[in-house]
Image (tube, rainbow, N blue to C red):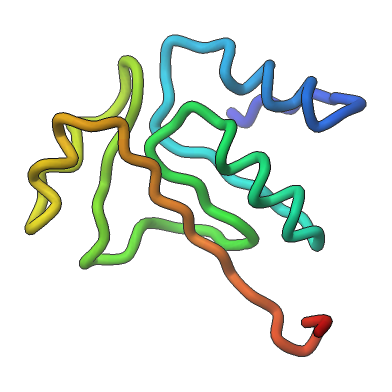
Length: 99
């Protein structure tokens, strides 16, 4: 099951996403890097995937906020268990990059 909800503004989408007891991961699909950065900074979750699918990097930290996840206690990221960490994954499109 995949819940689909419509929204009119980025503020509305972020508010809806944050209005939850859970905060494991989020995904953002956009061509606008400013939108991606703003959303990933304001979303209350442990990991954000930007323009990509699947899972975290094997050497990355895996964490969740609120009632989600087990903390970032893997590898050298053990201290992250005591913090609200937020990992961001961005899939770039170099052919569309603007300088």
